[in-house]
Length: 151
Image (cartoon, rainbow, N blue to C red; front, side):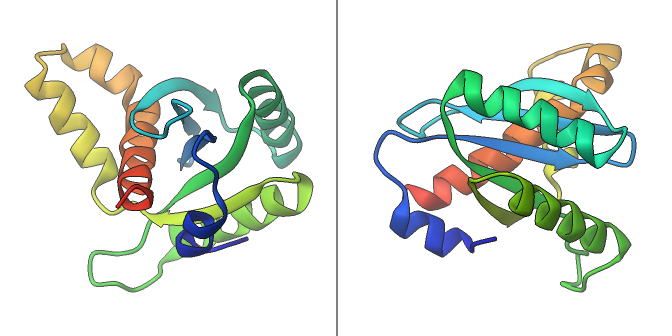
């Protein structure tokens, strides 16, 4: 795994990235354009096991020419690491070992809340908001990371 700063140094101008929001039941996936300016929701995967996740990610990576993965790191609001942060770290390490691609963690504090609030401002009904919350949170995470990479 690499840090976001290391990714910033080694990325090229035309690199597509995916963002992951790791939930306990579902995993939100987002993708950005080649110029890394806009992140958009891609899909939601049901969380089953590590092998299925790796296989799904390989398909997404191959189909979209992905060069890096940004994974939401759920740090507690006080800056400490809880159980979900350890779980994200474990999953990230598994992905990093299984795939030949740059993987880094991105502080995702408030990403789900932000995605939910943004969708409410766009006047999207509650059932649609809840259905797409994981992939929207992944887009929120990826957008934060690409904004950092571009500054």
